[in-house]
Image (cartoon, rainbow, N blue to C red; front, side, top):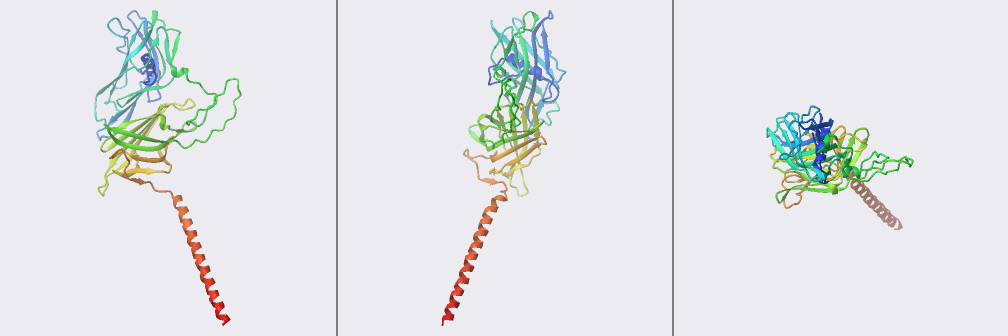
Length: 433
């Protein structure tokens, strides 16, 4: 079971548990709601939770590359170890799923509120989803619940999707319903709604283009006008960087636009002003992860290759994208392409391309880049090295060639007119004699 929790919003750990319960299911985002009803020895309910959750885990392979694995609790979730708690033990909600994976959260209360305390997630890299994992066995991740307390004798509810990121693991939670310290074995009819749901206003006009602007909202009594989607503008250019200690190890400058084809084509501009940067640097591989405020995760994986001339080069090898929040109620999307060979240039240089480029991740998902400059290795003094530009557009040469040809033709005409005129002038003089 997965609880939906957010580091940025003060919600309770209870909410997190609920989210986890709903998220459990086969397939990364084709998840089933997980429902747990914890009872005491007298068969009286003390904890009730229902939620959905998924996990995105980045791991290192035996070839020192990094890959992503996704986990979702299936419908065959167990909840061994869940307890109501007593004077010496805190209430605990625990689930087990898949090939040795488990998730749990414990709770505390005051006279008026209850809240989560610690979330523990254990995943098993012996699972077949971790192909060629360098480290085999159980890996445990522990985080404190940053959410705010929930009023006693109320049910915490939150449909909003949120995430927790720690140690290369992203936990996603949504559609949470949960109550801890249930009184008299009866789940309360009083709700505690999360702030994210309170601030969410569902528009009556659904845009076909997702951009940085907000779609118009009409009231129920107002007639819905016919709207024509505005063309998506060029995305803002962002500057991104990673550090290894105090030294910058990766530099990236680009505008990013996603082209998603589900029920309808959707263009999404990534706003660099609300995008968080993480990743890792190495001698032969590097990862740049961008996480914008709308739960869109984009991973760029770079690698180094040798050539016959013994001049190492770097290139973009892999792109992985997780889109948790789309429009029109679309299902979240997870896609990747680990067979790329883009942005290729000499190691120690930077790659630059001012024209728009397209990276094909899948048939239904492409990434458009604008004004790109990238250097994932051998960054010196926090500055880009000399850039190798991508193949220039043929159109860039048309204007100077045409202008040069026109000027050359004009000069030739002037010279011809001069010589012809000069010759006639001399012949006229001879006739006068």
